[in-house]
Length: 175
Image (cartoon, rainbow, N blue to C red):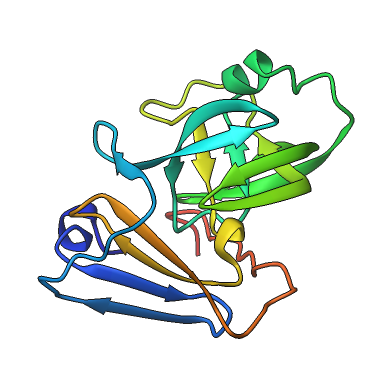
């Protein structure tokens, strides 16, 4: 696992349609979407059905958006029909509830009728209220510059229509 200290010194290029990752040391900092460090992680603005919020950009998250229990309640999402689901977290998975939202604007793109995950009511120290995942970028070439706090999204010539792979992480300490 590469830590944020190492990744902050690199440019991370994700070619999601072709399933490629490149890490490079570069003095050239590309200009990108509005994103900045909010405390420590890379944050960006999200519009969820006409209401704005800030979300942590997580290259390890596979969905469009994951909301904390508190933020989901604030946005009135707990009363919606949904299904049981799961999300990958460090060391394993956590049970979530998946609901469909009408509109999501993130990373310079509009999405309609997409599923997002709602986390259970539990206290996770330092956990963000919202996490923007790689599903938002599935057909893009993405450059993350943690050191400069920017995201550059370019549309790929190859279009992916399949959902990103979700791998179940083994629990730490179990064979």
